[in-house]
Length: 138
Image 1: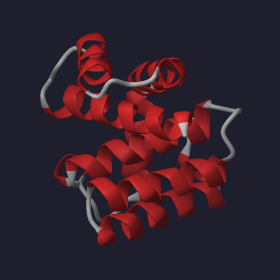
Image 2: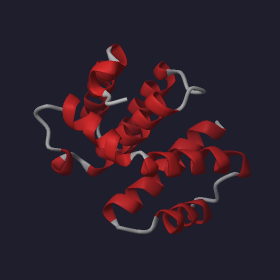
Image 3: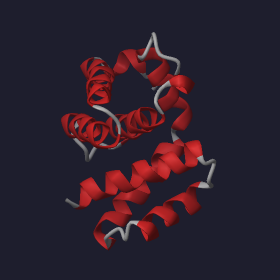
Image 4: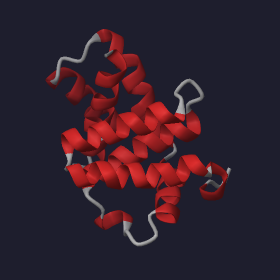
């Protein structure tokens, strides 16, 4: 459960950075404090937030390549940040199986966005997981 809480903490932090233009450290600290994030979830959440922000440019490029008919900037804010977080896990975290990253992203989309968002996120991430080299510039 700590990893689920860590992902939700990361999503909320990334949302503040993206939409509120809050500095990443302040956003993370705001979320940890406001939602009383357990100590066990904080370390992984911090790694997710800072890792995603550090790799934002290549992650956004991947989203643009996969979501051909969707403009990244016009995508639902929550969906965009869920995709960013999941793609960070898929491409940069060897300790997270791709299936787990996808499943967690879909679940968060259903909770924080809409049922359709769950399908959208699943479709985008499914394409990436099916052929990760095709979308990456690694």
